Image 1 (cartoon, rainbow, N blue to C red):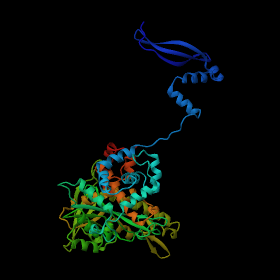
Image 2 (cartoon, helix red, strand yellow):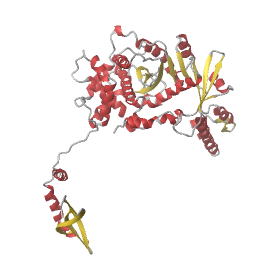
Image 3 (tube, rainbow, N blue to C red):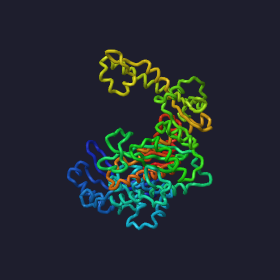
Image 4 (cartoon, rainbow, N blue to C red):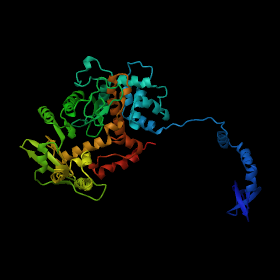
Length: 530
């Protein structure tokens, strides 16, 4: 008999109604495992009742470092420690360095002698915007739960000072590319340097995407830039400012801009493009913007400057667009319907010319048309049922109100309105002065949806910047927003939103179709934040 290995452990043995505790070991005998009883500790119920079992375990625990720590903790003798999350900072730092943001900031700050690291303060603000958007005051508290290199000594006033530096106006001789809405600041230099870092012989901005959002103030904020205007947050009672983002054809943020809260998108488009051409030495440019940017004055000014554009059209409010949608014609199929969720969403396009001068592209997604029809039918069924119980309360319901008409003593369902609404099922209308094929125009505009869906401005913008001591620092929100989007886009090869950074699950406009959401699986494989 040979013994190759011995493993001690405790086991029980039951004889009748009594259970005994044994110390045994395993031994190898002729190639088989045999158990050998080394000692019988006694009846289990008696050991537990007398406390001898606990005493024995404590006595043995004195010779184990791990059990000594656990025992000290139970006795209240251990030192309480805290844990810190490391995932967001590790990934954020890698993206920060890949985008060369740290190098750009260090170079711009070389002649300034701050007693704290401005670069680390900006990094903290950007990381906070990506994972838990809020104010600088919230960022200071948020960092306590994370292990972020170099941010330990930072206090709230350091974050304020870093934001003030970003929004610090440049000297007069560097203001030649300023917009009527805001002067050039340090954040403009950062944007230009970051674009130069990734620019090569093949880099161009021949096509840019433009998107805006509003950020409202609470308390006493917005003394200068804060104005009351159309609120996308449904808070017309509060002052707000408008933040715009320009992205290239790959979805990478190029620059950000800031305007007073009462500035309409249509008034900001032309000055921004002019500034864009000056700042980044761009020749030809094509503007892709959504329906909020369209107006006759804007198109006239853009065409006067001979810029190319692809713009969404408000189908229901434009008389000409209504005629374009109603005009007969054959659609050309771009992507056929498919039951495979990996395929692109179905798409048909139709080209329509008005007076041989204005070119429109009518786009149709048959899957979306089916959904629109079913949604409307569900609303109408509910509306007809509600009318049986009285109609006065229905007027305040926006979903019901648009399908109601006055029918004498009471309201009734407007059948004509239903027929008109059916014309728009699954459709959207574009206007363009490019020479691109209709299918190419539609695909470029769909790219704007993906940009907006994966880099939603209101996801990473600070919602309540009212705690800033000076109103001019609000301009820094746009810079923090741009740096957040730049880092996220660099890490995944495309722009992403906060929800993706936290969960790995993407957000897309439903019009993009199942194939676009398929990219979420690729994202989850490339980057997972704990």
